[in-house]
Image (cartoon, rainbow, N blue to C red; front, side):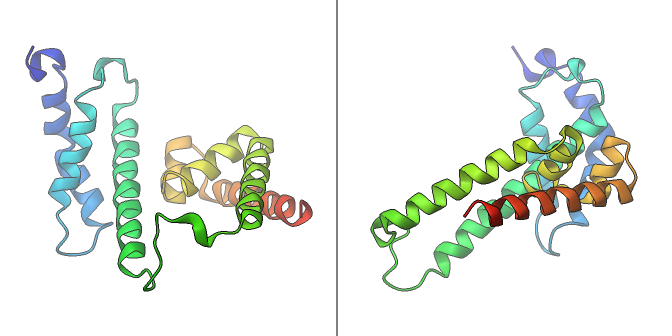
Length: 170
């Protein structure tokens, strides 16, 4: 079955949102980077979705766009780490990490996960969108229907709680 027949709204959505998505990416990537490829990545991710079932297509599209940027940044940071790794460091070899260091890291991760789960739902969502999805606080405020000040307060509350938990669990 052709993609247009399977997802009749994809072409319509692409026609309507291509230019806004292009502007979204052009404002967020370095000059010379191909924003068109990022727009195409957004639509390729949409190709497997039932667009008719999405209530807020614009919000969904820009969330996908933010995820595309986050994935791009993650790939770039990994490449940067590999390129700038000191001589003699085998990134895939964990032999340089002592069992104590590995255990401490795992324990800190468990404390962090538990602390995040302790946050109130809205605070946790704001924190998650900002730190894990790479969404700007202004975008979070717009998408969640909150003021920027409220989003900033939620971030401060989350950061304060996580810092407290990490400091007092050692």
